[in-house]
Amino acid sequence: MNSVSSGVFISEIDRERFGFKTARITGITAGGLSDVLDFCAKEKVELLIARCGMSDLAAAQMMEKKGFLLMDTLVYYTRDLTRPLPQSAHTAARFRPIHADEEEAMVSVAKQSFNGYSGHYHADPRLDNHQCNDVYVDWARKAFASRADDDNFLVAEMEGSIVAFGVFRLNSAEEGELFLGGVHPDFQGHGIYLAFLCRAVEWCLARRAGRIIISTQLNNIAVQKVLTKSGFEVSRGYYTFHKWFV
Ligand SMILES: CC(C)(COP(=O)(O)OP(=O)(O)OC[C@H]1O[C@@H](n2cnc3c(N)ncnc32)[C@H](O)[C@@H]1OP(=O)(O)O)[C@@H](O)C(=O)NCCC(=O)NCCS
Image 1 (cartoon, rainbow, N blue to C red):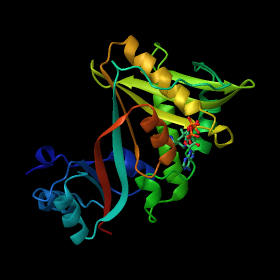
Image 2: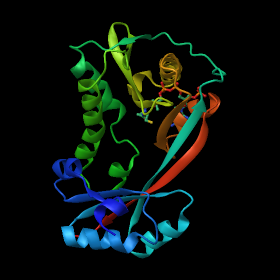
Image 3: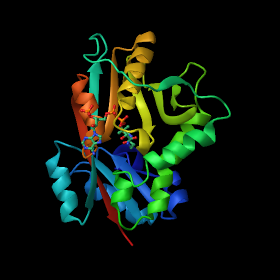
């Protein structure tokens, strides 16, 4: 099995950020594990980030035997867009597309909302916490740079300041996604995320998508409270493991 058939690849973005030669694979199986480890040995990989399906306990247990450490559990929620949302959002915030000169204001919100986030990077004690925070800020910057002119990047404003942001995208003609969202800690718990969710649904419906998906970490209770109340259902999940070779 080569890197193409096993799905393992060198992640330049992780190497640049953390300074370790990093490989990634999603959908690793018990049967494919030794080929992936061979690839890492040949390529002198220092860190392997491997995800297996949540039902594939054989893969998870095989990785445990080989010294991989569990870092997070990623859960995907799906909603059929032909059904109306059971709840509507009431919030004092004003929602609008982000302006071209508002990147830094949005980034400031991203920094505060994702500070110490509960994803797999932060869970790894060998990775620098500040660099882990930057992962999410960089995603927000990249999403800003590549935003379309169809209002797929919204901000929520309170008293003239940006307090939250939400980014939508189409993964296919059928599927939309609320790809990234963050609410400033001072403004959390006031229904702003739910309001983004409602707007994401409207945005996807306007593009005739049949479903919307959202992924989050299993320990992100706030997001899942909103999703489950809004009729989203779990559709799939992955365990994320890290394996250090150095
Ligand atoms: C997750 C997040 C977007 C939620 O935004 P929000 O505007 O506070 O969300 P809402 O007010 O719409 O609803 C949050 C719900 O979770 C609850 N909640 C918030 N924090 C919670 C916690 N730690 N444990 C349990 N429930 C929590 C709120 O009370 C609310 O439930 P309720 O409607 O029953 O009262 C925000 O907390 C955030 O920015 N977190 C960091 C970044 C992040 O996780 N982004 C999403 C990645 S998928």
